[in-house]
Image (cartoon, rainbow, N blue to C red; front, side):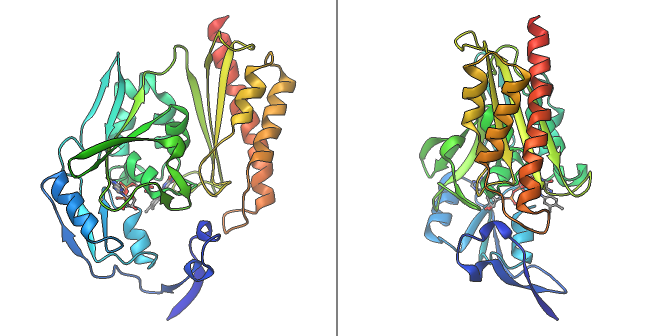
Amino acid sequence: MHEKIQVNEWISDRNQEEIIITMNAYPGLPEFDYVKPETFAEASQFLATHPGEARPFLGDTDLFVQMRDRAFKPKYLVDVKGLEGMNDISFDPSIGLTIGAAVNMNRVIASPEVREHYQVLAAAAQSVASYQLRTRASIVGNICNASPAGDTIGACLLLEGVLNVRNGEASRQEPLETFFLGPGETVLEAGDIVTSIQFPLPPHGLKGTYIKLGRNKLSDLSIVGVTVVGYPDPGLKSGYLMKLALASVAPVPLVVKQVEEILGENPITEEKLEEATRAAMEACTPIDDVRGSARYRKYMVRNLSLRALKEVWEQVSQQDA
Ligand SMILES: Cc1cc2nc3c(=O)[nH]c(=O)nc-3n(C[C@H](O)[C@H](O)[C@H](O)COP(=O)(O)OP(=O)(O)OC[C@H]3O[C@@H](n4cnc5c(N)ncnc54)[C@H](O)[C@@H]3O)c2cc1C
């Protein structure tokens, strides 16, 4: 028996036919060929010569679900997990943190350097589904899937993450700021393989938080996700830089620049925090879907942004006192 339902509300700006897909009551994966290249050159060449037919994968926690739901039907799945450096995680106090694309979220959460210097990334990863799922799910997969609901993306954006990308022998960097083009769409092209994400050393005194609202406490995608980081910045009139990113309330993960301006150019008061919160509410463009209405999301952006900004502001200002 087949039932027609809207499975991916975030594709709604595109061809309507794409959003209504046939859901099988007894789902299984469509047939595909498993490809395990030994080098980046081999992997890129295969992906580039089968555009639209071949996809790279890591933990496969997004791709398998989308294949089961028939959102994608790739002929080939290209396993890039075993390629050189993909499982490495390293921290250098003069450079920062590099997380290989295949490093799973539990390893990121457990890393002492991540916990010490990039705590907000650990908190965001911790909010993803369950321990079991996180033994497969990767940060890079979360990013490349380009869902507006990706829980770790806000932290990666605010911590100024940059993706290292290989295509055959060529390599380049893609800042996250310009990476997302729309729901499920990124600047990546056929043959591109993200090898790692790297973060600069965080500014001194950086504090952060991630607040996620889901339909239940565990294992649900966010209705709204709010990431905030803040740190002392003597170059600003207020003396502090406060940054805010939103999940699940726009076609792409959204950094609300007005928050930085409002809280950078004025002494930070209760009123200014509320003004920044209103700016976040106005900047987002949520939609109605099975997890919540657009109106509810807007109000939750306001409430949770205020809570997150206050929490981080308290920590940042107290450490300075
Ligand atoms: C039960 C369940 C619960 C979930 N809960 C959450 C949740 O709470 N929060 C959340 O944010 N997500 C959630 N997810 C979604 C998913 O687990 C995450 O997005 C995860 O981080 C994806 O990582 P992955 O390694 O499994 O990616 P994969 O599925 O392997 O890949 C994801 C996408 O990235 C592409 N890709 C993979 N590797 C590369 C590469 N090296 N270069 C270029 N492109 C690449 C793939 O082609 C695919 O399009 C959930 C999924 C399931 C099944």
